[in-house]
Image (cartoon, rainbow, N blue to C red; front, side, top):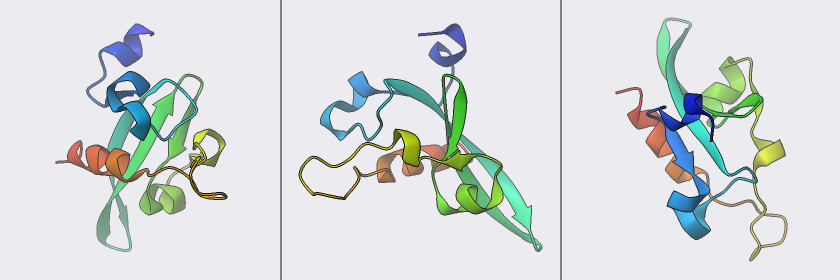
Length: 98
């Protein structure tokens, strides 16, 4: 794993999440940024992986320049057409804004 990821406070890895890992990559770094729009503040959660950064929550999808996480979001093997839960990633990302 590159040093830029190893030392990141938002680091998440497949090894640490086990069966709950919802991505097709082995690791990434969560980021949270406060964004302003129309006088309101909201939290934008993204994940940086080697070579790209993806929007995770609705705020990031609508207000950031990053593409939706779909290209690396894993399918749920138990439910045809469904994806694995990103909720724990979004929650952990939001903690980084606090």
